[in-house]
Amino acid sequence: MTTSAENGRKDRQFAMRTPPVVSSQAWEAAREQLLAKEKAQTRARDALAAERRRMPWMALATAYAFEGPAGKVSLLDLFDGRRQLIVYRASSSRAFRLARPCLPGLLGGGRPGRPRRPSERP
Amino acid sequence: MVADQVAHVAHLNARDTTLVFVSRAPQADIVRLKARMGWEMPWFTLTDSFDADFGVHEWHGTNVFYRDGDRGFRTYFINSRGDEQMGSTWNYLDITPLGRAGGLGGFARGLSSDPDLQVVELARQLRRRPRARQEVGSRCRTPERRLSGTKAGARSHEPVGSERVRDRPSR
Image 1 (cartoon, helix red, strand yellow):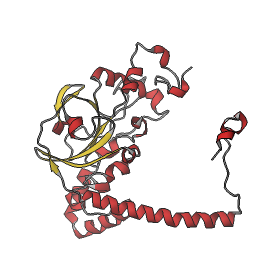
Image 2 (cartoon, helix red, strand yellow):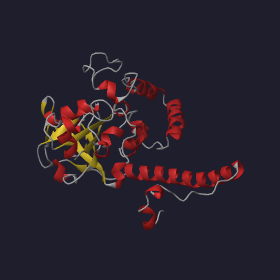
Image 3 (cartoon, rainbow over the protein chains, first blue to last red):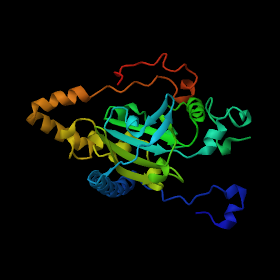
Image 4 (tube, chains in turn brown, purple):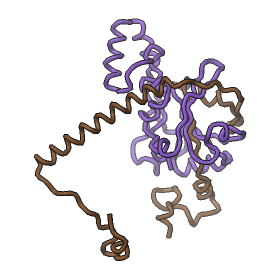
């Protein structure tokens, strides 16, 4: 919302163009209007979720192996006795690097014992 | 990181769903990071072509699988902007085959994904099928309680498993 000329000025750096300030009646009316759209979106999301549940399945052909705290396990082991399994692949090698004890200078900011975010670094 | 916004996995577990994280990092690094950040979800190390085969070799992504006896199926995959919003129990259940009623029994399939409607539909089904009521009763488990007090900071300094309230039967 700010122009490039404004960005150069420290005192205007976080300025935003604010929407109009209105009465409680007008505010309620605007909220009702938005709510109608939000409800439509919620219903559309539910319909999409139902369609997703009817997606075809693909049989697993390979016996994948993973290393866990207690040694090697298979993909079926990851279900841990339950019917459904959600696998999130986290890929932040930087977070693992920061958590290593050889880098004490980068740690300890924010809440106790967590790596500092880049913005929190000294 | 996504791990900071993931709801306690006990709620998914109670709905017949296991959530795990996987990474290329060795277990030593994973264990250290989990302890430091106060994360509790199961986290495994990739050893083979799983990431390449399921679209997550370059970046993050979420795959969903269903198990039927000794057979497994891939049912869903999402990454990028669709994946970044994951973390809430409802969002996770919405990408599973059993939906928000997950784990309430096979008869609960086909329920609306609107949790309010599900309660109504489920009650209707249970009135019609008294035996189903027992099935639901046996499958509902009370989620393991979080420790009271501050969220992650205090937790990471406590000895694992010592003072946790365990009211969920181990499986």
